[in-house]
Length: 288
Ligand SMILES: NC(=O)c1ccc[n+]([C@@H]2O[C@H](COP(=O)([O-])OP(=O)(O)OC[C@H]3O[C@@H](n4cnc5c(N)ncnc54)[C@H](OP(=O)(O)O)[C@@H]3O)[C@@H](O)[C@H]2O)c1
Image 1 (cartoon, protein in one colour):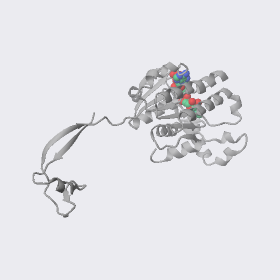
Image 2 (image 1 turned 90 degrees about the vertical axis):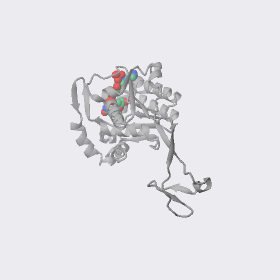
Image 3 (image 1 turned 30 degrees about the horizontal axis):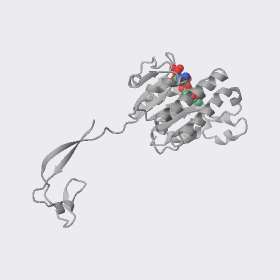
Image 4 (image 1 turned 120 degrees about the horizontal axis):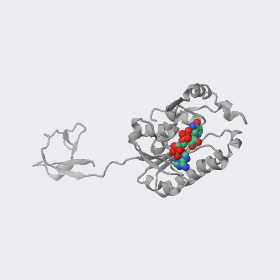
């Protein structure tokens, strides 16, 4: 709780009308607006304390904060001074990094909507990194239904902003991974309905960086980083019908994390879809 001390300045022979004509300059000296004459500093006779409400705090809930993208988002948000919590089926990850202890970990399955009840307490923004692969019906549930449940619960609880880490459209691959893309699209639609002013959809292609697999660290950037360099300047290739999406540049996981946290906390970040090129552009901006 912050206590502000309001000092009351009383000048023994200063009338009220004169007082109103006296203003404090930026360096704290007093001057009279009517005469331009500098007065002697006034005497502080008494100080009184005034209770002010605590400063507004941003509380971020990361859905899937123990996953590859989610863990980078948690770290980025902590770096920016946010209060961070996460929910996933397995809860707290087993890695021994210091950031892990600074996140409040909830265990829950988003396919069971009641799981989110406690996790949403006082939350101001949500970022969802929940998604996955498997059979078509499983992919639809995990990418679609689980996120739809979370979007609805967050909207009902008055959350201001919601960022959904979706995926780039891969053209032909959409048929192979039908449940994955249909689930993503259904969640995106729900987000735009429930959060027309505070909903942000990120559509990365392949995300590279260091992925923790058990006790091992997989350096996906070895392939991803050079591909990102080459393909980000070859945007016209991505417009070629059918095969164009294969030229979608990969993005670094830190770029996705930076743009996600900004999308969740910056009230003027535009709602709607941010494609790969948008992620690259926003992540390079200094304010991000
Ligand atoms: N990695 C990429 O290259 C890439 C590219 C484009 C888009 N994306 C998208 O980005 C998002 C994050 O990807 P990622 O690579 O970080 O995936 P990930 O490492 O597999 O993380 C998925 C997270 O979701 C949680 N989760 C899964 N099912 C859940 C459920 N029913 N309830 C609660 N939590 C659940 C998992 O934790 P538990 O298992 O503990 O529940 C995990 O924390 C996904 O939506 C993915 O489709 C990824």
